[in-house]
Image 1 (cartoon, rainbow, N blue to C red):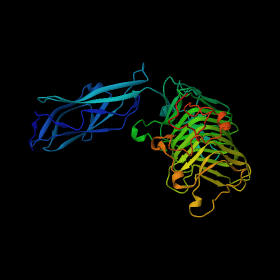
Image 2: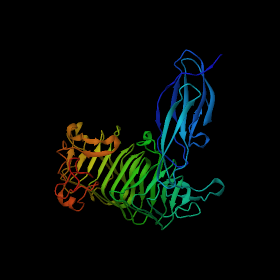
Image 3: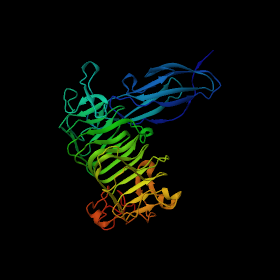
Length: 472
């Protein structure tokens, strides 16, 4: 079969390719570019090369061959050539974010053609057990008999930046399980960003603690390390944070996303969670077992099991929280309170909050003793009355249910959140049955919503004042 050198412009599927951001020395996903031969002749492309040649941070894959420069590529009449491109490069050490560009060039024809390549390479500290021949691994058995291997935070033999105080100088990328040693404290300063690879997470050993103190303008972020938009809302990409018998811990202005379980607390004696977002987790956003937790301005949403789970006793107080589960199974509730032990709940109080679900009952109580449980001034979805005249719970019990709004009809139960798929849980001025319905005395103890808006004079239910309220 004869092929002749190409002399005419070829049709390209794109003139510019924007590759998703990657961390330094981490390979991106591959992107496809198609080059079409629209003529009736079999042709050869004399040269197809990256503009920066062998020094380029981009790489090409053509017909199973990887490289940066190709010659005499044969292309049949009316056929197309698939060119896959990915990035693997180093960030500029003087910049957190480094825009890197190059070109795919088609040369040797009458009119040279090119496709622009643009990506963002982020600099980062990489925390991991070390190279294969020098790994620093510790084996830890968890309370449920699970055994994991990981590296101790604070062990500089792992990495010089592997300290117990992390800051915003660069993002951190974690490979494997980062373990907080017994009776040690992991401090996350404002603006800290931690990205976790698959099968990675944070494990706190007994007596350890986390002090994560972000601010409204400089929140703390913990999420997966896949930066492509396609993974932005994909659950279960890392394991999450698990603290066993921890010491006093706090989370303020923290976002935890895309884990299997966002935050798991076991026998915690004193944990405070404020202004915190827990989104897109595979199982649950928050699980607390026989723990003492105070939560204010928490938004937890998008899980495949119960969004918040409180189990086997404990002492819990939640104010101005939005717990939402948009799943379509009857067991996908916003709050599950369950007890399989003789340890009764010391207290569970939920106030000025929204418990929202798509189709399920918004909360489920699976326990015999409810004396110390109180729902006050909340919006609660109740689906049980739709099939009978009575609710599954006794809302006439004022000691347990006081001043709540029952979302027990389809019109009331549909909350007009702005864009829940993108984790925007403001509700609009159309939600008149929720706006201004919070108890003002409770709200004055938490006078600002999760975005810093004033709620002290007229309190909306949930973590947000509604969208038309201006920041004070």
